[in-house]
Image 1 (tube, one colour):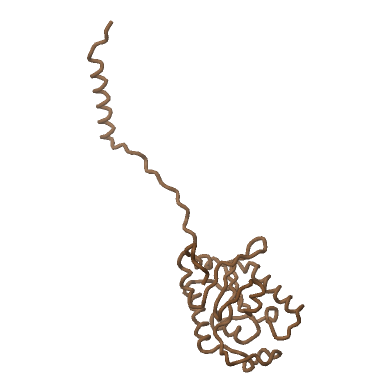
Image 2: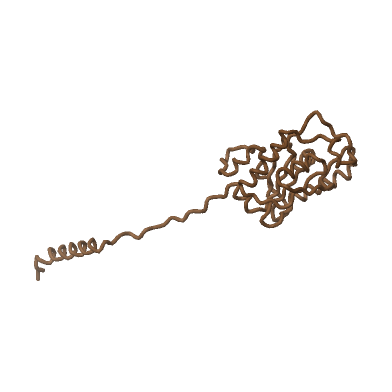
Length: 222
């Protein structure tokens, strides 16, 4: 028996009615969200969390002065000291730390006055220690011990939520890192769980404002 011809139009009519009903109900594709990773912290953000060691060379000094007395290191008149430019640099470093809200824990320095003055002018505190002080004619065994102490300081995590600042001799820093620093320049380290440490960046005294921006991969350390 042949089927009636009206079946096909009926099916088309039903399909049309269903489509109109769905349109009236405002059906739509569910909104899809894309998972994104949080932006990496800037260096300023990392330092605000603490856990870093900042080795800082003393600020600018008077080149006409010489270290004369290697025994009585409390006599600043017998040493090369900060000049006015160095004092301004020290103040600028401290102001940058406060503006960037970088927490500073201990500030350890050499016993020479230019190191203590740099720390005091910048951070309002200092902890001078012979353990990282290099004096002329120091026996090699004693020098090796002090270099070892400096290396241990750089690779040890500071008190939680703070950063350790070391204002020390550039010659001893060279022994530890193989690099030299300009007067007022800092090297930022991040100690690792395994006892090693990573040099994150070097920063001149007038470049602290740059650590609020993400670094380009091709950028060289300041």
